[in-house]
Every structure is written in C-alpha cells, then in structure tokens.
Amino acid sequence: MLSERNMNKEIIFNFIKRNTLQIIISAGFLIAAILVIVPLFSAESVYVGLDQVAIRNSPNRTAKKVGSLDQYQKVTVVSKSNDWYRVRFDDTKTGWIPSWITNRTFKKGQKETPLAESKIVLDPGHGGVDSGALAINQKHQEKKYTLRTSQTIQQTLKNAGAKVIMTRDDDAFVELAKRPQIANQVKADAFISIHYDSADVNNSGTGDTTYYYHDNGSIQLAEAVNHQLIKSVPLYNRGVKFANYQVLRDNRRPAILIEGGYINTRDDFKLISSASYPQKVATAVRKGLENYLTK
View 1 (tube, rainbow, N blue to C red):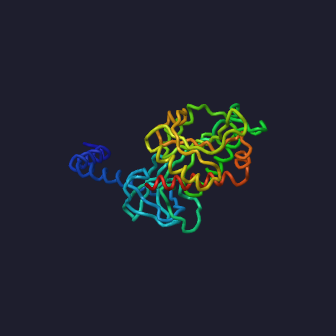
View 2 (view 1 turned 120 degrees about the vertical axis):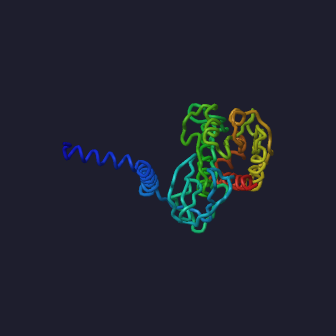
View 3 (view 1 turned 120 degrees about the horizontal axis):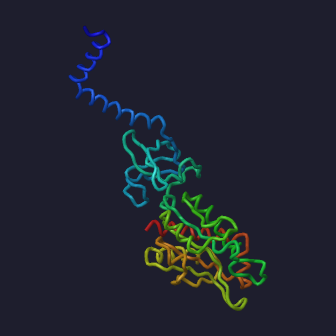
C-alpha cells in the first residue's frame, strides 16, 4: 500500500503532467509581470529643467521628435545610452532626452535649443609644463589666458543647457593627441580649441583668427563662430583659414581653433587680459554654435 506521502507526490505529478502547458504559460506571464513591475518600482524619476524639451526616437539631437516636455515636468527613466535618458511619457510611450538637462535649474521659461541637446568639447591650449606663447612681460603665459577664457565659455554654454567637456580644467599638461581623442570618444557635436597668437617681433601682429582642417562641418562651424567674433570682440579679424594643427587634423568631429589675438602685442594683450574679454568671446562662441547647430 502506498504511503500518504507517496500518494501526495503522485497526485502532484499527475496534476503537473495533465496541465504542463497551462503551467508554462502562467509561469511566462508571471516572469513577464515581474520584469515590467520591478523596474517601475526601482526606476529613477527626473525632471527637465528647460521648457519645450524635445523627446527623440533615438539618443541623438537630430533624431525624429516624438513628443515634448514642459519645464519642471517629471518623467521616469527607463534606460540610458550615450548620456541620454530613455524616458516614459504619456503613460505608455517612450523616447529619448539629454540627461544633462535633467534635475537642473534654469531660468523660468527658458526653452530648449539645439545647443542644449549638444555636447561641446572645449580645449584650453597648452597647460602644465607647456606655457604656450609669452607676452612682452614674460610672466604672462598663454596657458593662463586660454584656460581663463575657456572656463568662461564653459559656464556660458552650460547656462544655455549644453553638455561641456573640458580637455583640461586646471594647469595640467595634456598631450596633443589626447585632445581630439576626447571629442571623438564622446561623439562631440563641436570641438573648440582656444589659443593666443604671437609674432616673432613684439607688437608686430594683431587680430583674431578662426582655423579649421576638415570639410566635415568644420568650415561652417568656423564661419558661424568667426562671424560672431567680428561682432563681439573689438579686434582686427583675420578671417577663417585652413590650418594643419593636430587637434584639428586628428578630429573626426566638427572642430575649430580660435587664435584670440596676439599675446605679445601691447594693444591686443590689453584686451585679452581685461575683465570683459572672456565673456565677449564666450558670447560669440555661444551665438555661433546656436547658428551652426540650427542649420
């Protein structure tokens, strides 16, 4: 005679045998429900700091717009890719927004622009053991003024919503080869290198110049920024020119190099070292980028 324990095992086995398909289907539904519900409870919620934020169908500023968000609107992050968030909106729909404009405070009513969907790499020339060019008074080194100007540009672009990556943010030496690599790795929308010119003879050169190397959007970027430099910076403008600089040549992203005046020319340096100069350049770069990215 079978024991009660063995009889219970047999009953359970027969039940499973008769209902195998239903059990598999039920288990599948249970697993699917867990996969959907658990992320909802653990998902991150963020708010957008700008108004009229575009929701894209892929993590790219040029992707198709599938919706929009109001300033300070909260959304749930479903996944992340390339510094973009895939978010849930309208209950069942999903799309992509830049992560860097979330959980940040901007001016009330400030609208998103193409610049706010962009990654910009700023490259303060020289640094560390590489002083760059010297002023007439040689205690004034190019590396100090490239960093000073770049930091002002950085803050101006961040205030506009852009994601800004600096190749250096202090007096550090950075190999030339590494600078364009940073832009290539993050898939920057633009790379801008800041420098100051010098002449063989003091006080013999003057003016700012914007350089490019590739015809990959770099010419258009150079023209857009240089046009604004003419408007904002009271220096003789030497125009847009081709140059075989490594930071431009090795760059696969739209890239320019600005020589912002002659550091060893008295009048140029007086402007370069003034309190107002960095903001004049920053305004020109911001407006130039906005015009370039809108086209």
